[in-house]
Image (tube, rainbow, N blue to C red; front, side, top):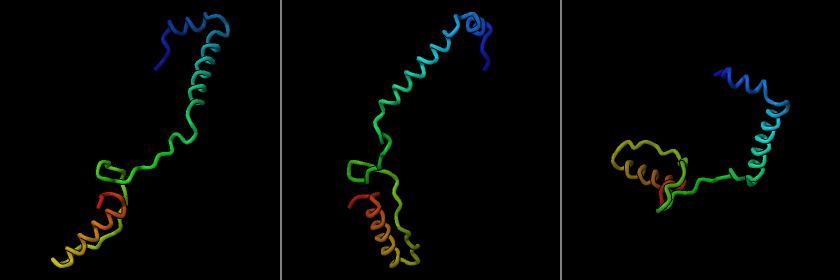
Amino acid sequence: MGISATVKKLLNTAAPGLFKAKLGDIVDAHQTKLDTIEENANAYTLPAAVTLTIGGVKKGAAVADATDAASAITQVNALLASLRTAGVITT
């Protein structure tokens, strides 16, 4: 995207230092704004899942595939325990 001829003419005919002074004001304003950000403002930890909070993505333990009806119950219970430990679901 280029600068239009009118803008170029205005910049070329402006009083010396005018553009630099305005640019300096903009830089100073942004620096002041950045200086007001608290230290560690972006330090965030995802909450654990509880009844009223969805929580973040958590990693559970590996659970083996069920091979028959009896092992299916064992594996489902292992999966539920893993999800609870990871904070994905509540007890």
